[in-house]
Length: 109
Image 1 (tube, rainbow, N blue to C red):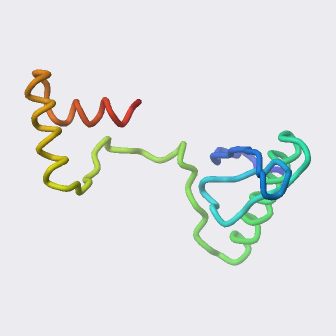
Image 2 (spheres, one colour; image 1 turned 30 degrees about the vertical axis):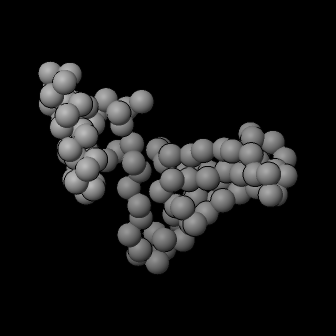
């Protein structure tokens, strides 16, 4: 049974250890589903998430909001070593742009 309006973030990848495809859901990192084909791994993880969400609803637990539905400000703070900060400031000055633009450009690569 699949979730109605399922907007969770799924990924299918090969598991060398299990010699099968593994289906994963970012919002439920403890869940996974192994299968011989990527299509079956995706179907399996989606069904598992649906069952877990139904169980959480029955127990009045807080259900994770899909990442795709969340609003992001575009801001976050990160601590870096002073020498990295200095190197970024030099690069920004030499490029004639802000440190924010330098970091944003590096993160988007």
